[in-house]
Image 1 (cartoon, one colour):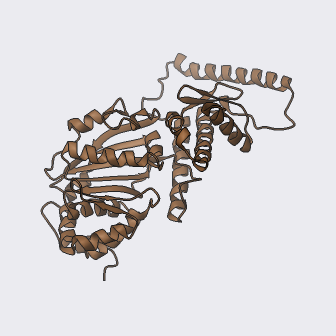
Image 2 (tube, one colour):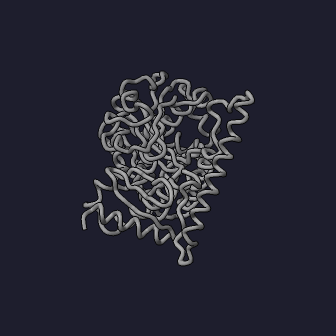
Image 3 (tube, helix red, strand yellow):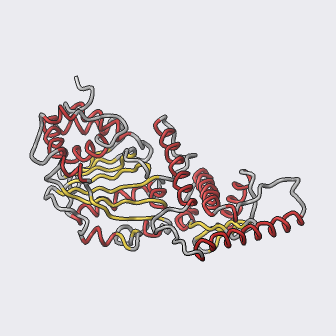
Length: 388
């Protein structure tokens, strides 16, 4: 059995285990699921290339993820392509014929009803107003992300969890106070709402991702760190899913380091959050020219954007600096000493690299550890909540 036939058979079995049926076919870099309506197709290029190298356990996990993605894509497509549940007592063929006729009649009525207001001179909804289907999809992804987030905080692993609804952000800060949005390195990393090969060749192959570059500071953040400017690369959909994959997670860290260097950033942070929330939950990489700046980047992004309060602003004010929050954190970190602070990272499963500045890296196997390291480091610096 060749690799594609193996994948087709495995995905078909996974869907059958969910009580669903249909025909599975690998076509190019996509996998198609045909039921009673138009086929559902999703991109599986990365899986196809990785398949020969994956152990059996990882293949099973990938197959389960593909099956869930197909089901999610089918739900997003609406009832017109809803799959039939496998049932030994399936209704006779005439039922489906009359049912199809009924659906066609209802669809015709719907078209006429939609056309009538326009014939009467009514204007359609303005651009930018989400359709009911889009709203329902966002709600579904939000619920999926919150459910996964809750389980991760309870110590669950990534294996059986859905990865929809997340956003990944690469924040780059500049002590010069200017925005980095127009830096050639960042602009070249994104085109048409997608990552380019200049951003990362492998991640650029993800076809269902969405990418954009925004300012690195909101107005309120800018007021609290007036000497700083920056930019944030926001990655959603397929890119967020790849970020939560063990094989592709290192690509994001490599890209973060390269873009930080190319853009001349003084600090950087790579983390993930539920796309509809501001809480930064999964910390991956934090960077600075030295240990105090790298610590400041971590505590800034994970401490000020945490679900609970991790930084005592009154205590931080004692280290006040003209540059605001980030400079005050860096000054407090310098006073605490590099050894004491890096131990807070390594104790939580992270690592410290001193190549091209200082980078604090947390593995995917310890997704929430950056928050714990932030809490410990802030306390050692004397600016954490609960500091003795």
